[in-house]
Length: 141
Image (cartoon, rainbow, N blue to C red; front, side, top):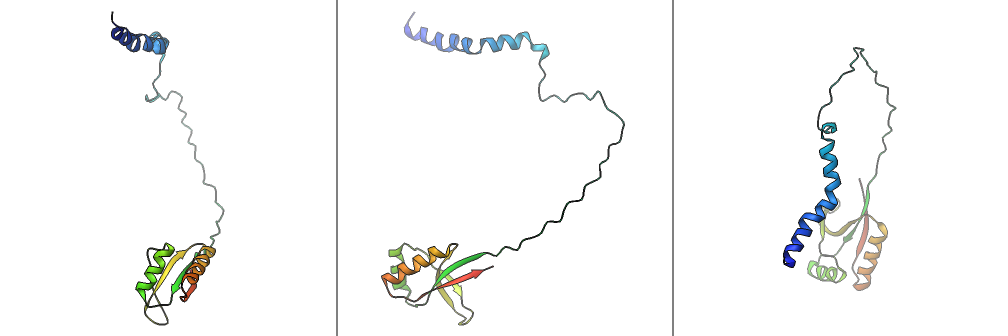
């Protein structure tokens, strides 16, 4: 016998028998007592009593009105190329366009931010790099 043949016999015959031998012997000996979980049990003890339950009344749930708040940084400069270069150095890639109610025109803005402190820090960082008029506006829904 070669070493290859001995290895194959040990791996594919003795190890599975050692690991699963007792389970297989138990399954074969108790085969008639096994109940499979997918079988529908037979209903043997049915009583003809009509059980009806009235629904209980649920308490009224108070609705809370949720106010969603976010902040945007409105850029008040019209030189888009210089603004875009400046915002690229800060790490802002995209601007959003907002309709202005007073001027009936579109304004460039950054945001929306869920945290006011982050918006203020970014505004201060942009103002320190170049003196641009940026205002913080609150949006509530």
